[in-house]
Amino acid sequence: MKKFDPAMAINSVAEISPEKGVNPNINDSATFCFPTGDLMTETFHGETEGYYLYSRHWNPSNMSLCKALAAMEGTEAAWATGSGMAAITCTLMQLLKKGDHCVASMTVYGGTFAFLKNYIQEYGVEVTFVDTTDLKAVEKACKKNTKVIYTETMSNPLLRIANVPELRKIADKFGAKLVVDNTFTPMVFSPYALGAHIVVYSMTKYINGKNDCVAGAICADSKFINDLIDVTNGTAMLLGPVLDSYRATSILKNLYTLHIRMKKHSENAMYLAQEFNKIGIKANYPGLEEHIDHKLMKKEFNEQFGFGGMIAIDLGTAEKANNFMQKMQEKGVGYLAVSLGYFRTLFSCSGKSTSSEVPEEYQKKMGMSEGLVRYSVGLDNDMAYTFSKIKEALKELKYIK
Image 1: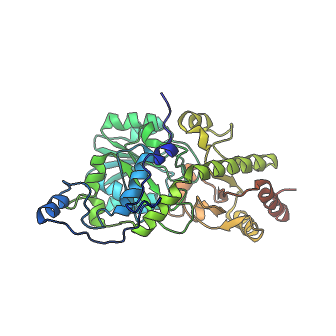
Image 2: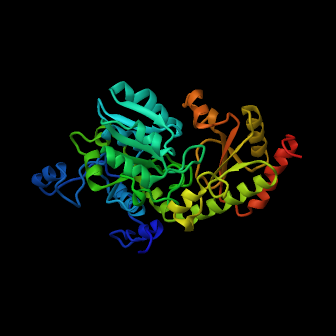
């Protein structure tokens, strides 16, 4: 059987505008009219297709993007949100109610960790954080009231790989939903095809690729998406984190180059990881054979897109990391900035930035050093030249000879 190809799947839902334009129109209407009152009522109750009620619910521009996202993931449906955190929080709040239990990876993105640790528990939801690469620990943490197992395909920032098929088996055993954040590795992994019930994204990152907007996505079966946007009790509908139609149309166009970009990000990250190792600085990158999850990733990933564009190195202390990042920025290597998936290389000290919401005790449990420098490797055409600048920075700081 032919393996699922997310890039070709997107092409299958390409749209031509009513005026025969090659790009879908931008529809900036907040509300929509109906030929009859009965049709409006039916649309309000979700009983019609081809009609739109109000842009907090659906908009033609968002619908076009969501069709492409669902095709990319192999899901029946998708819904776009105003941020990645909106996608994560709406999904979790739809699934978790007072008295429920969630098992979550302790290495999730800092904002997700803070939501699960400091926010949702105030509403009577119990959360247990575990190392989700330890399947025995996951199963041991599950209870009769466990409704969600939450993980990232590639963890942030330690780049561990989730065993999605095995996590699905555990979720099924307890009647829970497996929710997977695939922000780091769109197209590289197809979590839904591997067994995830729901896949969430920050589209701010690789999917859009331009760092010019904030957006998120939820990909799942039609029932979950319809429940999520139900006008009477859907979390996303009632909390209202809708994505603007102009941004939806812009992201849709960028989505069609994602496969090309992911291949180049992966190629450059592999080169950078190998070069770091050659000069005696150990690189953490799943594409390297010595990475603890290299074999697992090779079993699960879509090989043509490589091992992803994220790498990490450990300089021991935050001071050394900060001096190094500042020096790299001065030399034009990239930007000392949070986020990822940009066409320029971005670097940050995760423990003091994107994972700063994670308490130090958890950072130590997950093995995160305060001197960890996370790279989102860009689309540089000459990575050898870029690495020469990195090496210059290391030498000037006397970190290498």
